[in-house]
Amino acid sequence: MTKVPMKIATVNRDQVQVPWLWRLGRDFDLKVNILKAHIDEDYGWALVELEGPVEEIQRATAWLLTTGLHIDPLERSVFG
Image (cartoon, rainbow, N blue to C red):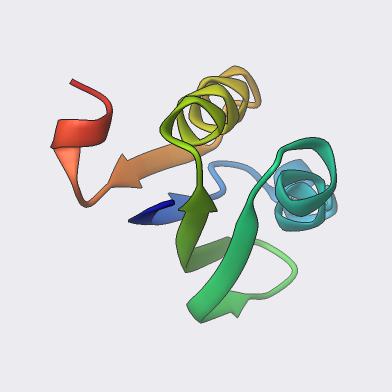
């Protein structure tokens, strides 16, 4: 199992209403550990650690990129 910390941030108000952290845990074979987060009605960010097979982390990251969220993986080697 691989652990990858990343920061996920919304870029518009509508994304705050979408349960994207819940979908990461439900739709992918991953454990999602929320390390820090701040979400209000206009903006939100979460520092999370995704744990699971590298292929699932890559698949989840690809999905996150399609949502328009701002993704900042803190370990580039898994995605390089």
